[in-house]
Image 1 (tube, one colour):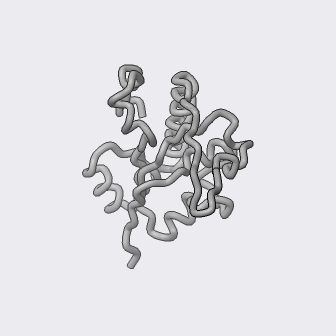
Image 2: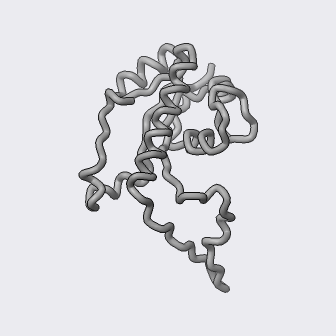
Length: 153
């Protein structure tokens, strides 16, 4: 008997977008792909939408580290422009919708717990959208520019 696993966070949308790969196809280059996940009992998870700095894929992440004798300091990322963040977020949402549409009913975007329960029962993978970093937006000026309408995804 396989016990259904619901993951608290994965970066599949960002990774597959920038790599121009398809989550629905087996891909040992990444930690998570649809065929291997289904085989292992993955019932779904929080699919994070993360907006990286522009051109960060070409950057060695060690450039942001400052080494000390007794530790490491990580430089904070520069603020991200709203238009760029919205563009990447919209692309990631569209990518997830495409994965859902091409999954032959085996991957569904969910919004409520009862949808997750139904999908687990029917052995359908659930994708709960997670806007990584958006938790801090309630206190900044960007909050008036954010609109999350579940009907749009």
